[in-house]
Amino acid sequence: MRHYVGGGFDTSGDPFPLVDPANGRTVGEAPAASRELVDRAVVAARRALRGPWASWSPAERSRMLHRIADGIERRFEEFVARECADTGKPRELASTVDVPRAIANFRSYADLLTGRAERSWHTPTPDGRGALNYTVHKPLGVVAVISPWNLPLLLLTWKVAPALATGNTVVAKPSELTPGTACLLAEVMAEAGVPAGVFNLVHGEGSGAAGQWLTEHPGVDAVAFTGESRTGTSIMRAAAERLAPVSFELGGKNAGLVFADADLEQAVGGTLRSAFTHSGQVCLCTERVYVQRPVFEEFTDALAAGAGTLSEYGPMISAAHRDKVLGHLAKAAADGELRAGGGAPRFGDERDGGFWVEPTVLTGLAEDHPAVREEIFGPVVHLAPFDTEEEALALANAGPYGLAATVWTGDVSRAHRVAPALDVGIAWVNTWNLRDLRTPFGGVKASGIGREGGDHSLDFFSEPMNVCVKL
Ligand code: NAD
Image (cartoon, rainbow, N blue to C red; front, side):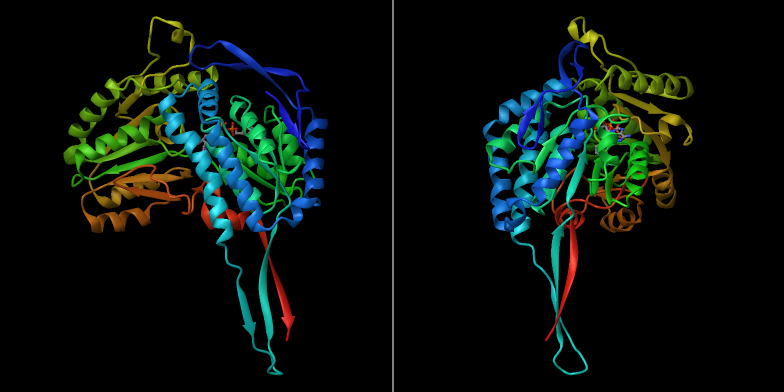
């Protein structure tokens, strides 16, 4: 595990342990960046802004992004193995979602970049000769990219790719729990000929360490962050000191709405996927499901039976996170009804030292119960009945978050009525997590600030400037 600063690898700093969440064993260590190293990374990124990188055309940057994607593709198995070792997620998930999406992140911004139109206007003037107005998009400068542990490579590259596409330089700080694939990415950047200082990587914790030092650094022009909402508050406070723009993708407490007219088999299958993919450790996972009363028992029985048969799932990321999830479950089991799961599974092998939690289905909790209001970020879903469409919308829209929601219905008019009325950034109808990288991605309320994806990312990572020429 190495930092990557100014085009060179660096192992300085006190080591911190890396733990395999599948068995709880310490399997390695990574160096924590000192404040001085964070400073060097920012200085290197600033210097690179004034180097040859500044004159690279969009076509050259686009070719470079494709070379980075080629580099990940060439080392695909290594990336998959490193992601699984860090997160404990099933190989199936890393090899079909995390690593392919990282490749797609670079390729899609490479393609969008070359097709990006600059706008111009002919403006009438009293002398009849007019003026030509046009827009030039400039990079923001040095961008800090701070990413979480749940989809480490996917979420890091989701920001690094558009930041580089638009000509910025980057200092990235991945989660201290999952630094592995970011290190491989730095190697790929070096192999792809990314100029020194254009991409920098520092490791370490967030609060009182590399993450905080980076967001407070006067040489950082913008912060792109994915993680918990309350971390977003701290980062926004730090960035506010110098009015640096932020793009935030934060927590969620996503609702699913199942109407009685839905294809129930499809709704059960989709909800199993949306609640338990990566053991619920995806920001888009569904943690609350509201089911129309006539089908509530049938749906709940089928979902509980499905949860009970899931075998391909991974552990929680850490002992602390497992304890938080089990704490929620203990309280929820006392106050409501456990329909499936509810505890830590026993395997009778080394996994018993790991941080596993059973896929869990709950019913009978009040809407203000912590397990229904707070983000658990584990394999836990609560089901409650509703009667009318209005009631379903009110339940889904309650609470502090607004990231994503899923609607299951066979009525096309209802789908178009309900989906846009949800207070979220993304609403899926009869599917979950079907993503087109050109669409806007982000949340409302405590779930985020700004939109990423497609042109929205290119807009965030660049500053539009107006040039007016009198003719
Ligand atoms: P986290 O906020 O604890 O940490 C995220 C990153 O921020 C890490 O790299 C961490 O070291 C750093 N950090 C922590 N405190 C910091 C500080 N004061 N200053 C600067 N950096 C700091 O989040 P997590 O536990 O790694 O990830 C899980 C959370 O992320 C969940 O809330 C989940 O919903 C959210 N998430 C959201 C999205 C989305 O797209 N909306 C996607 C994935 C995860």
